[in-house]
Image (cartoon, rainbow, N blue to C red; front, side, top):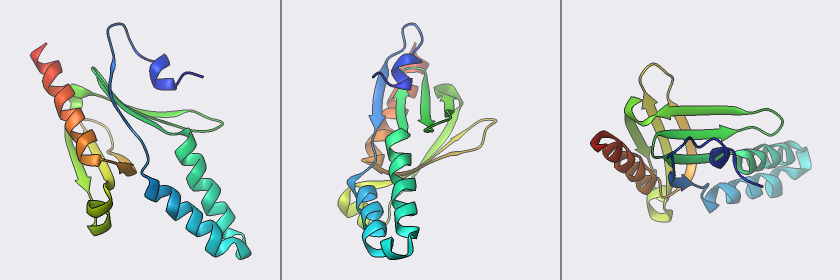
Length: 138
């Protein structure tokens, strides 16, 4: 099964980098399930988190940033690289140690896109900046 991002690529557009949820995201989901299963909220939290992980795709292409999510419906956030004004990385102490963090991508004329607990957020931010630089040179 091909991904939404691969299917939506335009002519001459390629994927520069894809982001993935960090394993710590799974640990938090499993902890909720194991610690709160008895009141059923743990089961709800676990499946809500895992469905989000299973149905989310994050990528930077040579033309845009793409976030796709949704199980029964499709919702996307796509920002053209020239419209990205800034990328904010937030890592707490454990995020710095374990290599995960949040991104906030701000663009012109749209709300910011918040991305939780991805692996190597600094590397993904660098991929966005590299793609922006390559696009401006073309």
